[in-house]
Image 1 (tube, one colour):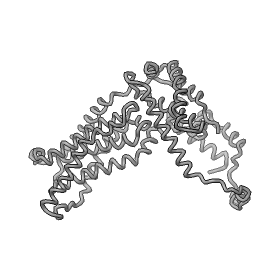
Image 2 (cartoon, rainbow over the protein chains, first blue to last red):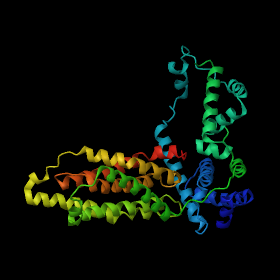
Image 3 (tube, rainbow over the protein chains, first blue to last red):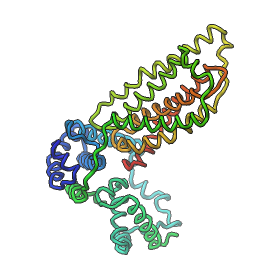
Image 4 (cartoon, helix red, strand yellow):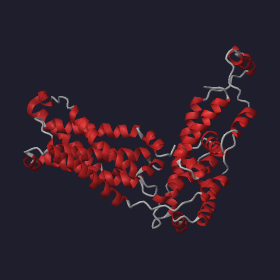
Length: 179
Length: 219
């Protein structure tokens, strides 16, 4: 794979696809040994791919490829485990009697109606955004990517994504009547 | 919300692939960074003027050893920083500056002890020298900024370890520069404050790792 990676560094897309196609099943096995949930495995594999893409210039083709990518996999697995652990500490179990929870006064407080966030309303507001703004919202908010990841998958600069995101939010706020 | 599938990620990544310039070797990186940082700190020392008794002091075993120890910590720390920033190098490179650091900390400890033996508890009156800490912090900033740019890929690899090593190396270099011109009555005070400054800055670097990750786009 070292040869393929060297071609990737020189911009060979064919070699990149071949490399990733060979790498992904191996990554799924490596990540799957440490993480149980299938969605965690897939998310982590994707994060390894984005990391590989972001720092592909640091690979030295004279050295073995597997230890290079293995460290990236281990780091992303550790990140995922940390994230899951933090999430676990933030979540509280659902009350055993759901009837009480849904009928409590706090759950039925209409004095401060929330903004209309019906999926249909959001979809309508999204269609009014420009394609670049829509892509920024989809990547940065809906798929919760970092700027770097979003820039990598969209081929746009981080600055352009930031500007588009800011404009999209302004436009969405206006659509929902929030100043 | 629908997340992107792995196939879609692969499509996006391959479609957006651009040629990249390979990063320089870690040894060359460390040499370049040390050269630039030494030139910067050297210019400051030259501008300020060296202390007149520097020749005699560097000949003194204690002072000379501590100066050599901080330079060694800086050099070995720089190499370790560039090494651990790469995914295919072992994190055991982080142990490289340990001998220099041990000599530095040991020398400071021995200085404290000998003052205590010769003058009793009164020999350990340290006083405060926040100017030392301030100088080391201020002087460290440009070299650290350069280091961040050179090793920003470490945000995806070992951000905390790399930052701590980089900060240790920079503080050690700044401390060596300060020893060239800072005139103080109590030599011990210099050692203790330099060491403290280096350790505090190294600790702060560890705390700042999440910011580094965000700035470098790894979060």
